[in-house]
Length: 215
Image (tube, rainbow, N blue to C red; front, top):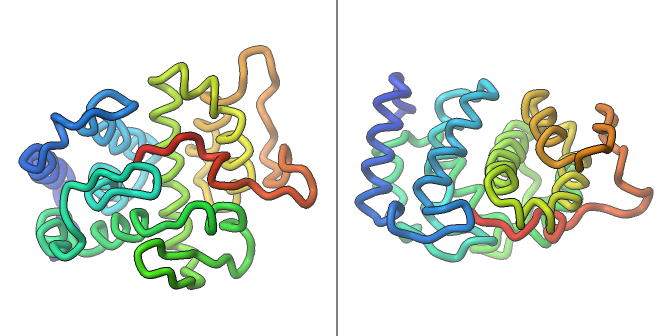
């Protein structure tokens, strides 16, 4: 199935699927899982993301992630999600779920970056467009948590800021500016657009720089 042309209808259908699989009742650092997912979709919409990425953001925790073990569907039933949000969006969801963050985060923005699939253990060099989708979705996910949970922002905000500064080449301007706004401690100047600023030479950001993870 192609991505739904009517994004409102697609969001409605995806939300109904999430409810059927218990997302509204599943606890999460951002409230319920469903509340978090809805905010991620809205943040992506505010950044001007295309419909497929917005739907992927809404459904990004369907198969669990390296930071949130609970899943709503087994991967053997990927077709059920694709039937609702389209093949393109479902592929983004699966790619996001498959990330081995410890192995992949540190060099994600470097040329020829290798991505390790935690399901298969294999590494690959994804296309730049796939990496940009992954980074944008990761930013929307983590920034939602930092925005609504003061404890998470206090504990992990610095690491997230280092991560998204290193990922600047992959992020949209809107996502990068949101990261600076949400994660820069009050009283400190926001960083410039330099992708290397804030990351000491020879020190790459790691999975632990991405906070507790949710999803």
